[in-house]
Image (tube, rainbow, N blue to C red; front, side, top):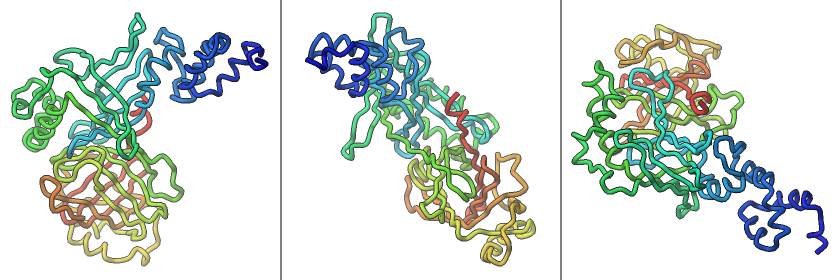
Length: 396
């Protein structure tokens, strides 16, 4: 009774320390606590502490209503997610927008613009109607307009979060055998391909498009844990990158290091039917750094021979020349730097169709600056360049 006799302002302050999901039970206990718990500043604090929700501008409802109707059900969806689509994967960003929660698909730039920004397509929105009803709407299929969808965050057997999305409309399901002539496929191909590259990329993008269309009514995502800790003395800081993969186009990858900073690993977030999403694409051995002259990079043969010599014989400079060998395939890549800050031996994963007979091929991991690095695939006689996805691309 002494507790209930405290001033209402103090009771509200005390209730700020009660987890939001337990406040409903507190409200049922007695009218005094209910009135203290109904103060919106209590729920504003819960929204920020538990779901990093800072402003209800545009929602036109109280923080208490937002917490109980929206955040309790969908607050755990905020963040970056990796799509669980065989081979191809995908990247989804869910974040707060003014008056809604917005799920946006982040797509690699078009084939010839690896240094361009990620493209964005809104997939779904979560908002509230004027009657106070939560509305979850799919908006990514512009041909038929917005439609209701189901969205939920669950836990798998390993107790990891899983984001599941469904459009409960049988007419919306596009079967693979019907996809070839579907207008969505034509729209997809038109957006993805530039006419001058059509012959090179068509087969790869057609297969990917059919897979995407066939699963368009039902998606599942897993949390994407990006490296976010800066590494002292690392040749390039960890993060998200866009990289060129010949006829497969541009893919999105994550770069990180082992604990001892002896190996750098580049892992696919989006993939292809040879080396799928979630698989390692490049592994660089940071203990086998290389210093090469421009003449030693004139051909793949000269480069391979030069890389057998240890860098210990030479001092590591701040900059060294970089040249793509004459017989190295580098289609669609322009403005390649003429110097690099670090180079080491590396291995790149290759595989046949369907991720069969996978192996690691010899190559060089090359750092140009904090925004880009490259991979010289010696055995494939090919070169890939990777550009960092900066914070502006994710936060705009």
